Length: 321
Image (cartoon, rainbow, N blue to C red; front, side, top):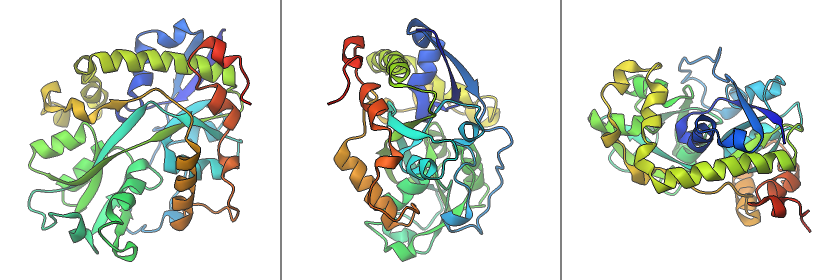
């Protein structure tokens, strides 16, 4: 195989295995040449707390932007947001399976905040990056503690580096962060009130067939194996990624500040049908999806996700029954 794939750029908290596979030549070994399309170029990073309804925010502010412009073949983002993006795609993109990293994220307040428990977030505005994983995760983490109508959110940019600054500057009372900014926030006296892991998925254009996705995933699986065998050797990725974006913040962190227990990687795999159904129903319950039918099959490419996630070349030649 000799195939070029253009991927939208990814941060370690959501794409560590892909970054390692790229750096260590694992995609090339599978006959895949990977190029990167910068999804962050030109993205508005200003807070827009007056936007409190996802319907007033763009689905393709960052994730999926390059694919919708025909400039990328594959991207990964949170599973919830990808349901919404593939519903609104103009280029026929579809989810093709879960990504390898299971992202850890947390809802954080400054040390002087009056909020100590999730219950106390009632009527407290939380800054979230709408259509990104920590937006949906905030709702899921809080709806067991706070009635839905008392969960208040406002739009802030994607990128934990931006949200951390807004938190520390007092622009927002609370926000969601991913690593390494959870660790940086804790080091500077902030408090994690509630946290959880969440899945993400890959979204592909029609240029990505099952054979290509299977080869891509073989490279990812080898990266997962290497990382899980020695997590400490790869934790530096979280700091290195942000050094140019936030040199002052990253100068305060060392690898020893990061917890390996917050790094969870698994082999990429198809989305289990029962979990997919529950996700779809939850998305509908919050009015995140516009479709009026009860069929989620149009949002997922089952053939590519099933065949493309098989582990061996022999398996990948077998069509799903």
